Length: 104
Image (cartoon, rainbow, N blue to C red; front, side):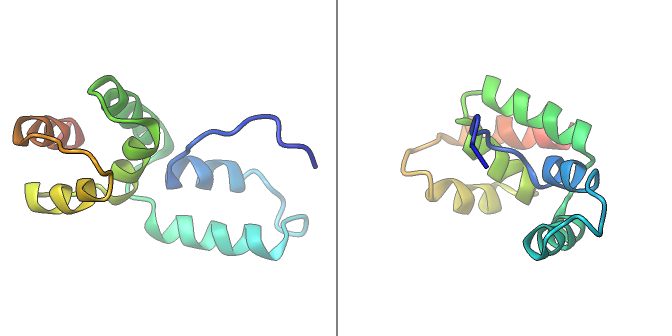
């Protein structure tokens, strides 16, 4: 198998892709991954794509936007904890803007 490109995708997007596989053709890792994303996907794939795009427009890197959509933090404190792992400072105004995007 040859990797053609690399792209960060949300759990919802992964679920959408994995659900196209026939169960008898999926390997053990694919089946386990599908179980995981079924349990932990917070929004439908289209909403995940839309939110990811808006967060990138807001100034997040694509992988940061994917993390945010996968976790869907509800409070400033939750988002601050998540953002602390990105090794850059985001002001409260930016974090508030991110939460506003998530709440739709």
